[in-house]
Image (cartoon, rainbow, N blue to C red; front, top):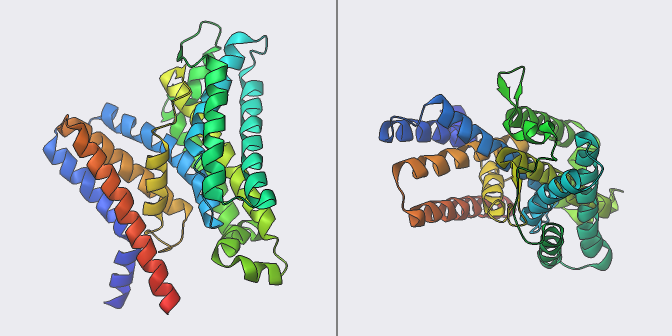
Length: 320
């Protein structure tokens, strides 16, 4: 009996996700249509990539409030460089964009690790700085379907691998597998969790806590940049406000993920399940009601629920 109870506690989020599918399929006959499921999956992939990035910085015990702005910046850099400069090579511009986002992560790390500004304040300030850069690049306007963009611009968000597998799914699987392997099966990756668990103890045993936090900020920024590229590709557009509504969903998926598998620990598998659950609920609510307040109510409730569960687990562990 105890074994089944423990299994339920660890996997309840997956069971709840399946229950959500059943409920919405009963409420809306079109919910299980292939086109709708693909839309849900694409949405989950973008939030999931962003959430996997945030998982890395949360693992170190810090956070990054500039994540949404980083998504916007990535889409704007891709659109502007591909559309208004002689550099029209998609791969080269993609690498350039991710390098720029990596520098944003380094800047966050510099403010927090080197200067000592709390991550909450540092990244909040960075978010406005990044928004300003994105607006300057686009003249505060949305860039749509430019004729100078190469055909590859829409491939990451709308294309299919072998004509069958949606590219957002391919990207999410690759990113999830790489970060899962790094955090769970390499010593360097496990250091992220060690620092988040007890930074002072890490200093005593020779683990450079500052370097782990730098890695966390950079990985987060690069993956948020990748999420921005995916979203811009999916919408065939770029906007300095594109990622503003992405932060809360990504944050929710990370905290929901901490209630799955490794209870109380931010982990990649949990984040991926949380991303799918969030996308299912979001799309399901859109299909059964037009009341926007209900969507906001449910989204806020999910985040608060996940926060309360994680905090209660942490408190119990400290008492034990």
